Length: 426
Image (tube, rainbow, N blue to C red; front, top):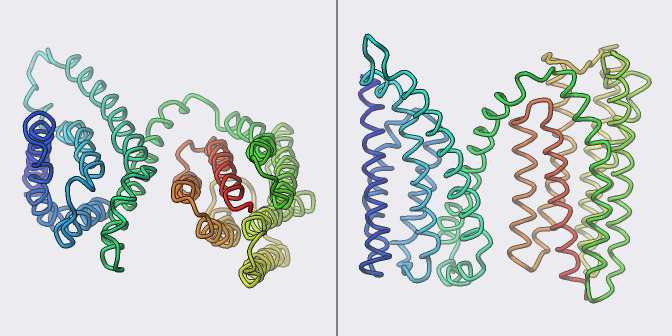
């Protein structure tokens, strides 16, 4: 019975894809006024499939799509105003075709099975090609095109502004619009994790750890170059950049010291302990410098404003969380607990606590900076670079090499944070 339901879902999904492709063909080559003809059928299907599917992320996907479609008809959004959004959503169904084929692999294999196994090589080649095309189309249509044609499309946002005059319309439209991109980013991170597993499986774990910490020892120094480049390219002098550059420089040096010590421990064939007498202060110092960098970035953002209350709240938030981090480490030391770098539950619990105490106030600070950013594209880029870092930390897509990609995400984030500051330099 379950297999029958899954087969029905896959076939129904392919029919929806066919309907969408037909709608796109008619829109581009026959009649430009029929872009939304498929949306009532899509909405009906997703509402029905919501109760059939067992996967939470798929249910969330359906909710976001229904939010966009309901908001379109409820607030009478014209095709001329949201054409880029609708077309981008239709294009995402291209990758759905290859995903459904992947899901239907057992049915296809059963159909092509035979005593001579003539089709084995054909089947394997077919599904390998399908996986490659699925990855390419997923990135192309669900990440790159959606980002460029929807997320940072200022013309689209200007057109949609008149449909967000009340809270309900704003939540339905932008909740669905951004929710779709965040969910697709989450899925793409999982896809990358599956790919990285195949790539890294023949590389010893110790080599991965050592290479990662050697690399990230130096990456944040690039932030100094990025900050200098952005601020020096401004046509008007903005002395608030000094505050931001201090935070960038301090964190870069702290990161170098911490990760270099970590790498040297691996080279000596020793197990790294987070709260040993040799490493605890570098660990706490690195955490403290993250707080320091985040606070100074907020200070640079509000440098020319009179909102000192925001800086006070931000400072107290970072100070409180950092103090709690010290208390956590002190409790572990008092109980003579040893936290080694391995895959134990104790390490996971320790890092979950300390990472949360660092990430939460930092995220709040970034939200304050984004709120104080006038340019909508820069604001979205700040938030999405932060979400990217969060996905990398949470899903660990490259396993022991994930921290390399996390630092690359921080470089992107630094660029947009600095860019947001020079927009309000006067």
